[in-house]
Every structure is written in C-alpha cells, then in structure tokens.
Length: 313
Image (cartoon, rainbow, N blue to C red; front, side, top):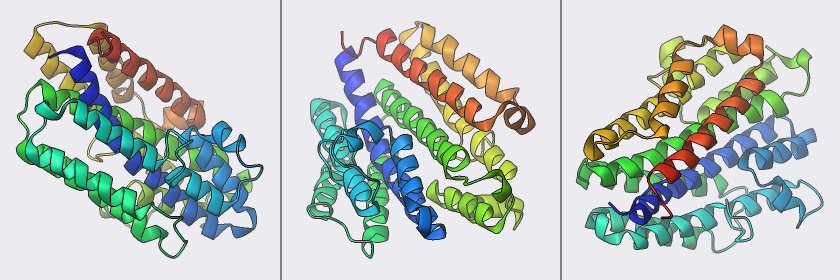
C-alpha cells in the first residue's frame, strides 16, 4: 500500500475516534460542573487543557464560560480539535482513500458527517447537549460497525485500527488526568462523596461505568477506577487494552510486509512497561506523572509509525 493511502486510513480513523473522545470530554466536564457549579470555570479550563485547546480558546475568549467552551469544542472551525473540525477531516481522509473502503463504510462515514453537520449547525443548548453527544457516539459506532462487518482483515484494516487505538489511549489518559490533576479541589476531598461522584462521572465518560460495577460492585475508589482504566486489559478503553491492540495490528503489518521497524520495538517496550507496572507503583510515583510519560510515549510511537510507513512520502 502507498504510504499516502496508509496515512489517509490512519488519520481517517484517528479523527473519527477523536470526535467521539471530544464528546466524552465534554460530557465529563458537563457532569462534573453539575457537582461543583460554584467553580465550574475550573472544570472547563481543565477540559480545554485535556483537549489541547486551551491556548486557541484564550486567543478568542477571556474567560472559561460553560456555553462558550462547549460551543468551542463542538462547533468552532478555528479549533482544529472541535467535533465539527475533526469530522470534516475524517471525511476528507475517507474521500482520499475511498477505493480502499467498502461501500458500507463510506456510506456510514458520509452519513456520520451529514448528521453531525446538521446537529451542529447552531449552538447546542444545555437541554439538548446529552442527546447531541449521544448522537455523535452512535454515528461513530455505525462507522466502526461497518468497518468490522465488511472490511477485509488486511493492511487497510490494520492501519485503520492503529489510528483508532492510538487516539483512544491518548483520550483515556487525558480524561484521567482531568480528574486527578485538575478537577480535584484539594487533598481533603480525596475519598469524599464529591470525589467519588467525580470518579464515577469519569467512568461514565469512557463508557465504563457498568463494566466497572459488574467487576467491583459498589466499591468506587480512585485507585480501583484508575487501575481499571489503565491496567485492566478487559476494558476496551484502558491504556493496556489499546496498547495491546496497537501491538497486534503492527505485528500483522510486520508479517504482511515481512519488515520490522522501530515502531515495533517501541510498542513492545510500552506494552512491557504496562504489564510489569502495578497500580501501587503508579500512585507511588504520581498518577499525573505516569500519564504525562504515557502521553509522551504514545506521541512518539505515533510519529514513528508515520515515519516507518512513509505516510507523507
């Protein structure tokens, strides 16, 4: 496969995943703002940090007001990570690699783009926000479903999955960081009802609330949830699960092309570190520091994949 086509597939699915993940960040901010309405500006400042959009936002607006932040993250074309921007980018990449996609995937992608554009043609009210965020996730799920149901398990599929899981791991790490590093108002709140409500909101934001409860019952703790979202390989948005999928897809590409690259060494090292790390190690060294290191490793891995497979060559 040409590097440009591989890159188009990788970024189509990475942007598609990002649109869902931004919607999940907004949901996390919206839910947490409801628990602390008096200081909701802190919540929205942290959400912008997690989305990597704080500086762009501050170039346009002087204060972190909920309606403006939500609109900026959903609809603002000056924000390259807004849902509307990344859905546009996903569809543009889909057009670039149209011949590599099944008809069902292309139609699902096109429908996703049209539905999201219509829903975001005007500012979304607080009353309508939950339904709009749910719709964004449902449209993403339809593209994923068409991909799983109609695409050959070849290099096309593997480049698509690389984009999905690298982006998903990045998002889960950032959502965790929002809660632990920024949203926690003071050390005295750790273990409080407020703290536990916010951690449960994080679980809901990554679609893991029911799964966590099924495994752990009503025992909601910061340590338990962090372990679930970082190290539990059964959780499809955990860092360990995503790293394992990236490793598997790179392994398929290694066999298909009969070539081993630097990215294979990097992902195996990352997976090895996750496999030998305990939640006690993470908390002892600092959850925020662990997340920063993981985000750095993930970014370097993504850059190496782009170089190794000549996405822009």
